[in-house]
Length: 256
Figure (cartoon, rainbow, N blue to C red):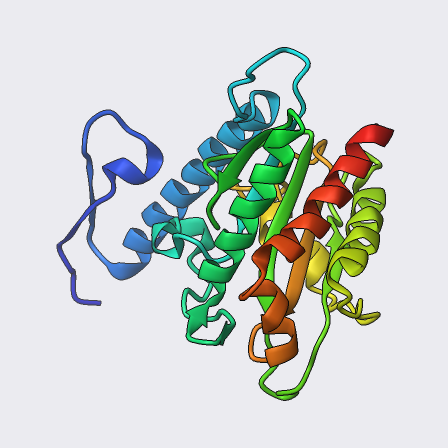
C-alpha cells in the first residue's frame, strides 16, 4: 500500500491543552489512532456527564423555599444545537396560521410563566437545547402538533418521562392532562407515540443537555397547529392553553 502522509488536527476533541497532530503512514494506522482518540473523548465525556449529574444546572433561587419550574419551549433556538444532538431535524416542526411551532409554544410558555409567577413560583424558560443537565421541581416541555397524514387531526397529548427517577412524573402528566382539558375543552388523545416518553430532553443517561432524572418531567403537545379549531386555542388564545398547563403544575406542586 502506498504510504500516505496525513496530518489531522485533533487537539480540541479530547480536551488537550495543546493542539496535536496524528501522523500516519497508511489509512489503517490513521483510523486506529482516531478510534483511540474517540475512545478517550468518550471517557472524558462520560466523566463530565457524571459531574453534571452530581452538580446540575438550576435556576438561581429567589428564596430557599421557592419552588422552581422549568418550561422548555419546543424547537426554540434550534440553531444552537450541539454536536451530540445533530440528528435533530431543525426544520421538522408544526406550522399553521402563518406561525411556526416554536412561536406558538413560546407564547404559551410566556403566559404560563406569568400565571405561575403570580403564585410565587420561580419560572425559567428554556430553549430546545438545555444549558446542561438541568434540575428543577418541575420540568414541562411545551410543543404543538401536526400530522401530514391526518390533516384534520385535533386534540392534545401528554406523556411522562420514561427516564423518571422521582416517581412523580406520571402524576404530573396526569394532572396536566386533566387541567388542560378543562381549560381548553380540547380532546385528550389516547394514542401516545412510543417516542414521546423517550423525548431527547428527558434522556440524561445519553445526553449532556437533558433534565435531571430526579426532576418530575412531562411533555405536552398542546394541539394541532394546522387545525383551525385547535389553533383557536393555542394560537389565538394562548392564555387558555397556559391556564391548563399552569393549573396542572400548581396542583402537582400542592401534592409534593
